[in-house]
Image (cartoon, rainbow, N blue to C red; front, top):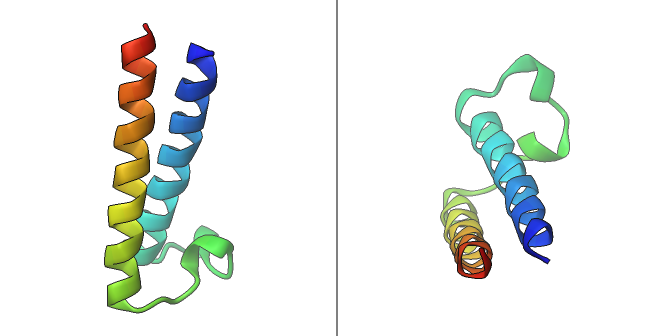
Length: 66
């Protein structure tokens, strides 16, 4: 069960990281993908808060089960 939390956390973090890169730097290889869809500044803030909350929750779950 531990590995499930760690894998979910890792995948979530990778998606979060790619999205952040796509929104900040707009690299060519991430153009016209799900990650580079234009959203407002408020949505970016909400997205970051939600993602960080999920990451913290999953990470603490995984660590507490070690």
